[in-house]
Length: 102
Ligand code: HEC
Image (cartoon, rainbow, N blue to C red):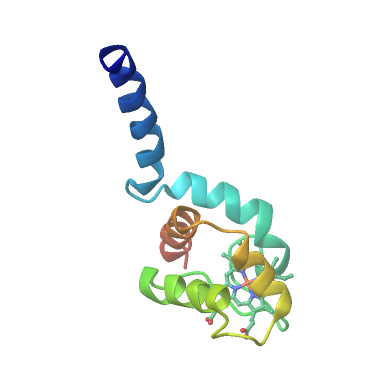
């Protein structure tokens, strides 16, 4: 039993561990286009109502998203809702993508 289960368990572990790998810029771009561009613009440049997020460092971006998630930043309920939908891996992908934009 244990012998036959081992490969299955290892395969499952590899799947679970995958999102923890290096940030995926392409995945971040896809997420950004689907969820963030409506407000922050296609290129993250923002406008009068929404802040520019293009070119934010990975550190600043990640900190901001964590603060929306943990309730430190309370200014905008819609932004809080957006942040709470995201996993840590998705935030890493998004931060890698936006950090590359200028
Ligand atoms: C419904 C509109 C809306 C959507 C959709 C939205 N945001 Fe925002 N976002 C805002 C607003 C408004 C603020 C400014 C709120 C504040 O001052 O705390 C903001 C702030 C931010 C900030 C902080 C910027 C800074 O310099 O402090 C980041 C980072 C951010 N958004 C990322 C994202 C990402 C990533 C997505 C997509 C997953 C997203 N936003 C989707 C409206 C939106």
